[in-house]
Image (tube, rainbow, N blue to C red; front, side):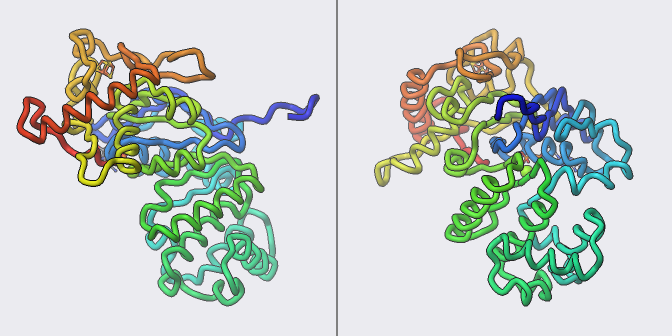
Length: 359
Ligand SMILES: Nc1ncnc2c1ncn2[C@@H]1O[C@H](COP(=O)(O)OP(=O)(O)O)[C@@H](O)[C@H]1O
Ligand code: SF4
Ligand SMILES: [Mg+2]
């Protein structure tokens, strides 16, 4: 920051967020900040509450969801806004990139009109100006022949092209926050790489902050500044990406990283590390730490007292919810032990329930 400039408000600041669907407590007491221009990765197994958290931040949850807590976007408390007031400001505050662009786009409207609508409604442009701005927005996401593509319907585009259109729409008004829910999961590997490169470039140019849900630790390593790990509705660990990768404190994060390491460097034919067991259903959480039934470090305290999220180590904001947080050294040793245990479990040992971690 240049001396004398006011400090920029965070792109997103979530405080004590809870999301409930009837008896299902999908997000519990989440606090998370996405700094201006920062990419925050949200990681965790299916059902851990990632989408509920992100959709609550974007105010896109169905009315059946009960949401409490504060959400501020670019310093503006949007949790206090009524539905219609929020809809008026939404496009200028945040853009969303969904996993399934086909479902997110309107199938009966040409894509150029869909992009142009944003400029017409939220930037006060005339229809011809908005159409021109839409073609420019499609060009910016590196769609070739953007004027011709603007006239096509979503089903006439490839998956990668549709995702580029979604990115163009999300970034059209250069909002301070982009929420991306597994935006590359549905794409083939080479298209994924192109889209990631594009987002990396746009991010540098536009200075939007990203809340990025992904199950791909490679993406986290490449793009993210900060990582937050969710388990059973809670953020159980968060910190700068380097710290999370080099010295994770929570055994669950260690397990996720060991899975990735094995995928990249495991000897051919060697068993992959697996986190034994499966996560608890959000309506039937065990007492104490919800990870205890799967945790190699669990003690009696763990099964009685749910650990709070607390500072872990001394490095810039790193936090973990664990009674026995590890260090980087523990992690390397722990991964070996756990890998051996998972192997033993496959051979019929007491762990018995070993299952592949499903993100
Ligand atoms: N609309 C909904 N109605 C009822 N339960 C839901 C709804 N959306 C999600 N859930 C439940 O909330 C929990 C968290 O889901 P979700 O936020 O989608 O997790 P993730 O994105 O990590 O897979 C899951 O148990 C899921 O079944
Ligand atoms: S609190 Fe105990 S059971 Fe939970 S993750 Fe930490 S060591 Fe494992
Ligand atoms: Mg999800």
